[in-house]
Length: 181
Image (tube, rainbow, N blue to C red; front, side):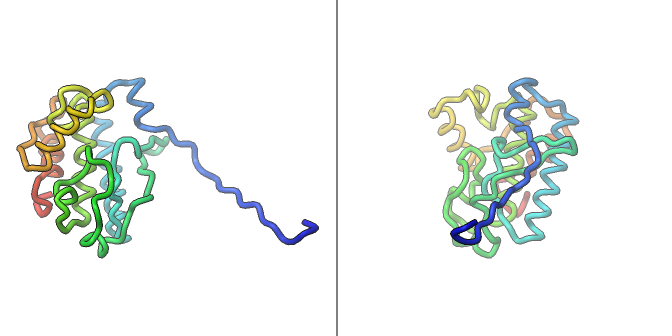
């Protein structure tokens, strides 16, 4: 340019389809699709652990579908694991682990819990633990009641549309005590 040097930066992103959009079309995922999502989320959790990250915002709104599988987006509030001890309550309450809400020490198991909420919801007719209606259709009162029951350690019932084995994995991820996840 005549008045100095200037750069144009172009960022290339792959085209991703949101899981929310997919669910609006399909209503429910099959158990095989839920298992595939769980495996992909496990890979994400391992990647975060290897890089000492706590994502803190695992939620269905941040999941995307690619031809190769599922991806997690929005690392905007991710923190280093060593900073998780003094971190504040961040993330969506509907997916929040009890220790985050209680402002206790937390780390990688926090994201495991949130991934468990996602899998539970998908295996339970799009209803989170203690919800009467689907997650996206629930009103604030229902969300608050369900949240209170969950973060205070009430036993979470099995997901309605999951096999015994899948329920076992999901409920382990949703253990109230982080060390049991």
